[in-house]
Length: 90
Length: 531
Picture 1 (tube, helix red, strand yellow):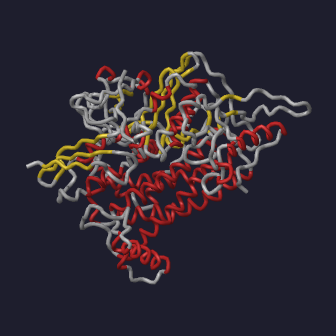
Picture 2 (picture 1 turned 120 degrees about the vertical axis):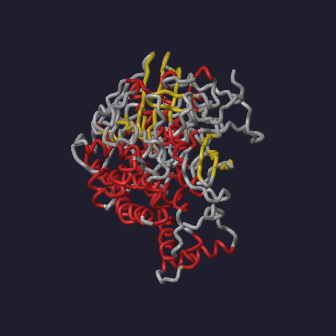
């Protein structure tokens, strides 16, 4: 669990954040970074749900220290088979 | 009698660089360049999961994480045997390009310009332009409050641009440049999540699909930047270059005539064709561009604080074993050499390699030479060729020309993205494998090498651009490019060695690739033991 305000503040004038770019939270704001957080990328297990097409080309990465908000959002979008939002760009 | 001048640290660069020059009769007779910090990133990676590499090496530098993450991704792609999808290749090019734009603008305006422009002259501005009047008032208010950093203190010199009107315009561009850099960072963030410490490139590809929305958001910012680069950045470079006092800098500050470019911005999945070409030049013979051979890379540690037995190794077998009490050593930078020669890397190296290939008819389309003609720079380039020297001013000018060429090209690359198509080639980590990632960063040729064994990182090595440019002497006693460039520069006043820092800064050195080891509790510099 990482304690940071990235989900609300976002980065670069609010344009995006790590989870918005389909990438895991690496816990970079945590004192333990990086020594105790390796490996930073682990492929998500193949998850299949009845009636939904698996998203083969979607990158499923799970961070060793995903934020609660981040990981929740990631799993949710994956389960619903939807594309994640474009990080606040419109 | 010779006098030794030490500048430590050289300010208005990134990182910690010490320069010592020996001055005799008002001219630099000898020079030493020292990286005064230690970079231990490679050691952190030993025994770790290979996919950690691009995240960890990004932390080499907060200014250019982009290039390290990119080099690490290509390095891993190579080790894993990835076939990079076009979308991923293009997104990586676009983000690297955005970083070039940000970095080049940063360098000229926020790091180098104050070596040429007299900010105090803005106080004498007598015109009516509301923006410039506001700038004058702002600077007067800062001066009154005693808040004059980073403009003062400075080395005093009688050749600053001190015309109030011109100084005010240039300083107003200094302020605008902050906004422009912000836009370039936002472009990166669109595809890579954030900047710095971005997350969007991974071994095998990228994490964000191109969409109509993110392409449009990227292009909107790029269009603003292109207009500003054309109408402000390139024009300011021409203005400063025309100042008569700076005429000697056309050839003064030549680094010895050897240039190396790994090339970058792949135009096909194999990287056979690159927008910025690969090649090397020796002896300032621009039209004879040689074919790069990776086997000819070595690093000398004769004058570096590393164990002597690690001298003259190829980076693939490179070792990072500090020896901080070594007699005669004066830098934490190793001395990389190509075919035994020191090489300047960076925009000047890339543009000269490109110019050489264009002049030799080896490029499909000429882009640089027509631009040089159009901007009226042909005679200046000819003068450099005749003298066999490319100095401080060409180094700044080539950076600006590269910025323009790249920004214009990026607009075309956006059209080549294909929403809905593949962005990632999944490959498993092999039991044992070697990889290399050779790319160009804003400051020059960057190489990462990896050895994977038992599915973890056995060895990781980086040779960063400033290691080339700010390198110390090698085992044969050859000086590094910055050391050579300083020799012969006029230093009329030893208290104000302005020309020394003008020359050093023209290379855009970035020593941040060297890190301290700080103890978290007492914040002191920790002694590290080599076991």
